[in-house]
Length: 238
Image (cartoon, rainbow, N blue to C red; front, side, top):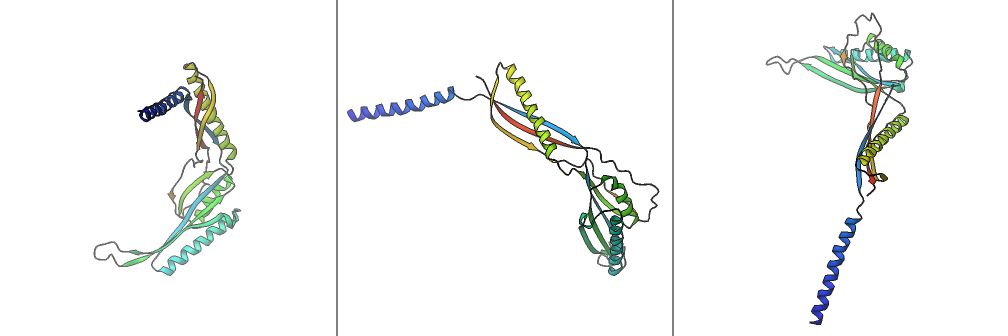
């Protein structure tokens, strides 16, 4: 009997401790207000990456390759004349393949060869973008794949966007807390997500290198936008 009595007492003590602890934890649970904030900044780009190339067709592989090589050299010389250094020009893609007759019963007959050479040109002076395109086309390029604008140093702009996002989150939290009759007394947790500046536009077009260039190509870089978001868990008063 004594042993049974002691066991029951010990069991009641454990249960009391468990429930008492849970009640105490519930009574002291920290009230949290979760809010997200957004900040956006705009800035003018100061550099660009131009993807352009030359595609040649010929009845023989040698002619197709030589025509393409000659055009590629001419394009590089034209870019060099504009002050574009060799380190800012790199081969992005090169392909060589035979062309087949696609008509019935002649699918294995080679009709010629196609060579494609694409280069990526980094342009540090945006005033040269239009001239680079015009000079490349006049020198043999017949394919402009894309034109992407970007910003060299984005640290300050990213900081500005994050600051604006944090202020936005705090303003929202203050409004909600005030409506509830509470006050912000601290921060429990915070996380952020800031994206990358994206090109305002990507242009893809074909052009004939023999076309008459009657006017310079106008290029407007416009502005780029960066958005940042923060999620904050604010501690509010009881």
